Image (cartoon, rainbow, N blue to C red; front, side, top):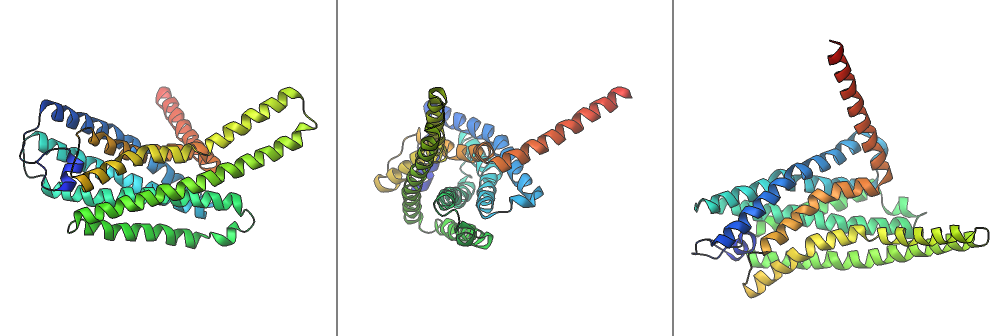
Length: 312
């Protein structure tokens, strides 16, 4: 059914062939998973953006990059996932009028998912700069520079996404190259962050060793390992979500081969947009406190309304 390499990659169907029962079940499962991701993706990213908007103290360079990530992930929930579900419904109904939606899907995926991946890479570099150049960081990364970095990602990928209409395979290969570059940079920066965290923890341990008991010393070792391991949470999540779809895209473009299970790789990639906001709420203390504050206000208002309704 697909009309091009990119259609095969994203729709997982062979041209001029009817969908087998297995293909149909894959498409249905893919659509159900996408539908489940939509409310989670929208709610989480709206919450992050609302918290930042209501708290001027959070308007820092690091949070600007995080907001750019939240915006791209929010559009994945608002646009990409519904479009993908609509395409699946048209395919299952036997309609051939999904080509325009499929083209729009290609443009949106290149634009938004590439922005998300590149922004996560920029956040990893920003986190390294905070740890490595703590005193010089305010001069190295300003809000204006962070905004320029985010704007560059959006503009570059907007052009790239439009060019896919004319040069499909070339643009897909370019996207794979950019993704590989992001993986490479993130691997280097998170490895460096891990080393810095471990070094700091060893210093703390050495200072505590002379005055603390053996039990507390053992606890410090455990905490050091946990904090160092937590450094890789962002990297592992990004790698697990984006690497399979990147490999699938590369195989599809270079060898013109695809497997139906590849649909799930793209669902996993979209899943990253739902995971990101909750991951950063969990790991960013300032955002977490602001979110808890908002949730307490909402719950207190709900309790007051319930009491007022009960009195009436």
